[in-house]
Length: 333
Image (cartoon, rainbow, N blue to C red; front, top):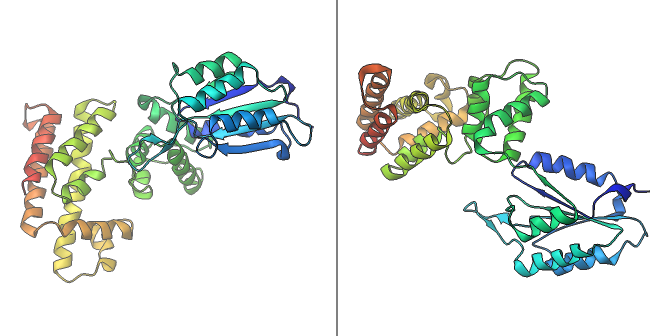
C-alpha cells in the first residue's frame, strides 16, 4: 500500500542540480507502488494528455504518481532548451491543478523554469516547488560538498580545477566526483590528480585554449579567454598566472611533440619523452603540432616565457591585458 495521503497534488522540481532532483524523485517514488507510477516526458505528451492521465485514476485503485520530465525542454546541440511545453500545454496543466485528482500526485521536472512563469506559480499555489538551482559562483563549493558527501578529502584548488575542466553540467561534475573519490580510496585529491584524470569537457575550460590556438582563430582565442575571466571569481592576476602556466606548459608539450615527430618518433613512444601521464595527451599534442612549423612553435614558447616574466612583475600592464596581448601575438604566428 502507498502512504501518499500526506503528499501534495503537485511537485515542481526545477534547477540545475540534477543529482538533487534525482534524490527528490527517488524519495517521492517510495510512497507509491511501482505499478502505480507513470513516467513520461513533455516531448511525449502534451499538457492535455498529462491532465487526462492524472484524471484517469489507477487500474489498481491506489494512489498514483505521474512524473513528467523536461517540461521546459531538452538541451539541443547549441546548448539551448528546445521542444518544451507551449503555452497551450501549460494552460491545460494549470486548469487541471485548479481541481486536481485526489488520488494522483503530479511531479513536473524542469531545468530552469522561471519563477514568474504561470506554471511555476500554479504549482506553488496548489503544491510545492523544490528549486535546486546552483549559482555559477557557487559551483566550486558545490563540488567540494559533493566530495565531502562521499567521504573524499579534496583540496580547494582541486574542486576549482574540476569546474574548469568539466563546466557547469552538475550531473557530469557529480559523475567525475564519483570517479575521483573511488580512485583516491581515501587519499587526498589535489589539483594535479584532477588535471591528470579528468578530460577537458567544458567549452570555457583553460585546457581548450591550446585547442582553439591550434585552429589559428585569434578572435575565438580572445573570446575564450574572456569567458574564462568572466566565469572565474578569483582576481585577474591569479587567473592570468594560472592560464599562463597551463597554456605555456601545453604549448611547450606541442613544440616538443613537433620535434619528436619530425625525428621519426611514433606517437605511441612519445608519451614518456614528453613527460605526459597518459597516451591520449601525447596523441593530442601530436595532432595540435600539425598546425604549426617548428619555428612557429619555438617562437610561441619564447613569447609565453616573456609573458611569464611580465606577470611576475616585469610589466606594469594589467595582467589580463598582458595575457591577451600574448594571445594576439600567438594568433599571428
